[in-house]
Amino acid sequence: MARSRTIQLVSWHWDSYKASRFDFWRGDRLCFSRSSPPRPTDAFGREVIETSPQNPDVFSADAEGQHIHTLRELIDPATLSSLRKSFSNLCGSSLAFFDADGARLDRVGKGTAEAQAAESTSAGFLAPVAWRTFKLGSVGVLEPNPEAQTKSFATLIANILSVFCRQEARIRRRVGELSTIYGLGVLFAHTDDFDAALNITAQRVCNLMHVKAASIRLLDEATGELIISGSHNIGRDYLNKGRIRLDENPIDQAAFSGQVVYIEDARSDPRVRFREHAKMEGMVSGLCCPMSYRGQTVGVLRIYSQIKRRFSTFDVELLQAISSLAAGAIVSTRLSAEARVAERYARHLRQAGQIQRRMIPRDTPVHPRVEFGHVYKPSLDVGGDFFDFLDLPKGNVGVAIADVVGKGLPGALMMASVRSALRAHAQSIFDIDDIVGRVNRHMCRETLVSEFATLFYGVISPDGRRFTYCNAGHNPPILVRGESVTELGTGGLVIGVLMDSTYDKAVVTLEPGDFLIFYTDGVTEAVNYDDELYGFDRLCESVFKHRHLEVATMTQQLLWDVRRFAGLADQSDDITIVVAKVS
Image 1 (cartoon, helix red, strand yellow):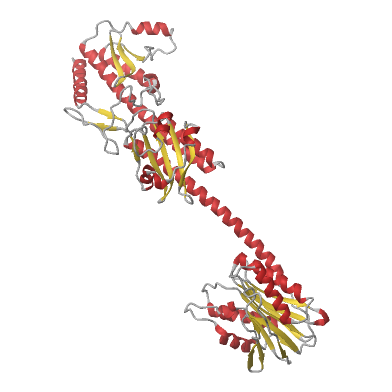
Image 2 (image 1 turned 180 degrees about the vertical axis):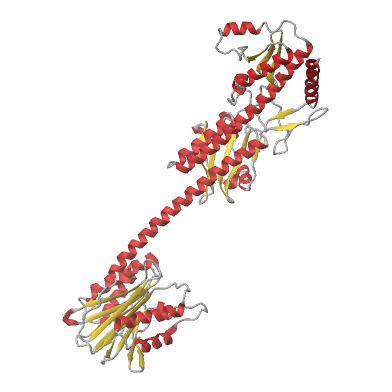
């Protein structure tokens, strides 16, 4: 009596459950209806095609190559054994489970396959374990004429196993999808061949989403073309079908605006430019998904089925996840490549700076009547300022200071050119104005119109009592004598502008206690946080303040006064100071 009431109660619950007419649709949506179930729609608002042998679900072996699952694969033997024992205790009848091919599952390893199949025919009742039209296995009652309640309970178990199989298949699919996404992440993180990684991505997307073909198109921002950088199961003729410009393709334009575009039939969709090629490739329905990472879209990922197919919301979200993963890897790879280029460029700049510093004198010249001090502080690794001391015949000492237009590597190259030309001419020519004129013509021949330099060049006589100079547009050095300041401005235009420029020279007499201060505009044009210039007057005040010091110390103090004035404000110009003290 108790057994009968239990069977009735379970059967009543199962009948109530079946009365809801549940139905899963592709994308794992569960629809309930007491009358007729609603027609499911996908993420695009279109009706989802019902699953059938022609339009497969996760249990089918469709044209997309999806795997058939069976009861043997989806339910473990321990669960079947437990169900069989419980059924036997409750109903007093023996229960058996059979795979889709009729092989008995709870007696694996006993007897032959033929014997097992023969034994299945002796079952008095078989309840199919199925999903829609796909048979997964069956549940059989092993007695000739089982009672109706026993049949109902066996049917209930078969129906529950159908649901369990569906859930297990879905879980396995989701695990496979997560595994694929994880594998792609590892692939992108460790690959050195990014083109191969994109081809692998296309292949895994096809396998994961059970579609025929996939392609990855990356945008060339310079040309506006979408370059096929990765593909799977696409013929060479299709890949070479012609240029694909973003501004000429409405599907890709929509994808770049953030939409996932559905293509119902690529063979007839007017938005598809190469419909004949799609027909020859067997491409029918498809999705075009943007490859975006942190707001930056780098390309599109396309998939194509070879039958008409509606894609569910989950399909769309899965494709978006893979597209975002690939886009992140692409952006990261590009940034890494740019960083490597920037680091290589920075290393070259550092090396150029080291070479340039070797051109700057480390030691001061030895002169019986004049002491020298100098500081050189480029704003970058390499600079456009330079100064030089030249050992000339008969004990003369040349002093040069220059500032070329521009900073960084271009400025450094111009500086090296000016230095080389000056040194070459200074050794063989006596007239300073002629030397500067020749350097000017050299610069005019070797540089563009927009490239020029300021140059001051002077020579101190062996006895330290005469200073001959020519100033080609440079900040005038100052001669400090007692409390007076004299600017040395005689010369002409900057060098490198006019080929026929002429220059004048001047001679000043030096006395013991005089100071010659040479500097570049980085000194007087240094600014503080109030946008005030350091200026010429502050420079003169600093000279008077520190002229009692040793020349080397005095030069450093002139620099520190500039820095104390500017504070932490960024400076965009090089600073060069040379001091000569006459004794």
